[in-house]
Image 1 (cartoon, rainbow, N blue to C red):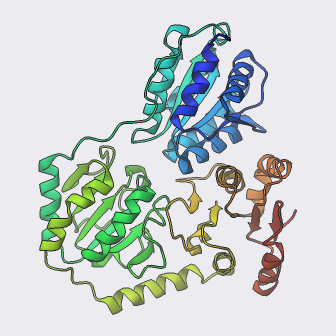
Image 2 (image 1 turned 90 degrees about the vertical axis):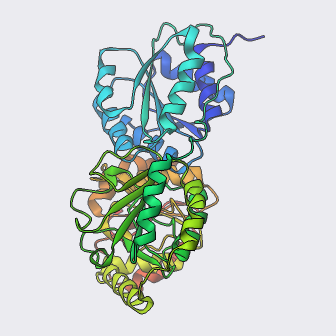
Image 3 (image 1 turned 60 degrees about the horizontal axis):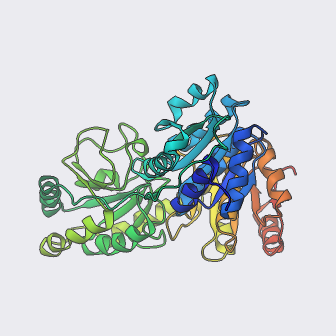
Length: 455
């Protein structure tokens, strides 16, 4: 019987946490080799990344859209590149476990991870379980495991540990009552969906919005929680959105503080929240922590008993049409909308361009955009991760000529793996008619296809 090593325990923990694959950064140190071999034995696919930064973004997107955390193993030869990749995961609140060897440069990762944990043979099972739980617990983010090259192949005792977070406790009664009181008196409530919302939450959010009724805005990470063609879905949250001035209550649903820059919402209207992690922004009239779907379910008696909101349906329709018209006011916005119309249901769109707003999302994680400033080459890199996670779905990446050039390593990886991604370069495209013809022609092409721009 083969002995179990530290690498085996780590690979087993990753698999039980739900990691879909192990992203491997360039390098041949003992930790990379041992963990990669152990992952293969455990049935985890290994994806060789072209560089350290891309490895971080690939793993982050895998964690963002998958059932478990992203996972990567890397050396410290390109610690600055790895820092950039993990910083992306930190900004996007993506669950990720990064395994590296020990070394002085390991300390460089500390500012961009939730924790750095040193793995010893006697406690390897404990630390991989702790890392998986910590990465997936709100606020989600990257966790760093440090393994000494001299111990990664030593014998370790496999331990039966839980590698997924348990259910959240019931919400605090005082906070719940404060939220109920705010809802009872609100005449024009607005719901804002964010990155903590899951597909299960989406089922409850629609009924909740329709019963109030309440208009719904979304952060870039909260799109599709209410399908955007729905009459109550009024588009992306923006300080200039005309709906904001009309609201008398903002209810943040799964919104992380990083998604709501200061001054985004009018100061006059109260703000309440349902979320999974404590709020760290400006004070709220109520902050209810718990499972989002269960909190919405418990609010049902309050919602049914309150007087219906006083939104003018015709006014909302005018606002929605104005928002859509603004999204398609530029040639780039119209091209994104045309692409949406040409693609089948379930298509995933990635982008590092503002005009991704013109893509109509009908489910969570159907659009992938970075929070804050996107990592160079994000659109194509995210498309690679999305296509690997969902090989049965189409993936379209929207970028610029500069973004395409920055994505050369990810583009080469997509070609090597024969991924049928469509990359739309918003820039030197002749006209909308030629775009439509070219898009239709390449739709069924089972390989990487670039429309517009150079390449």
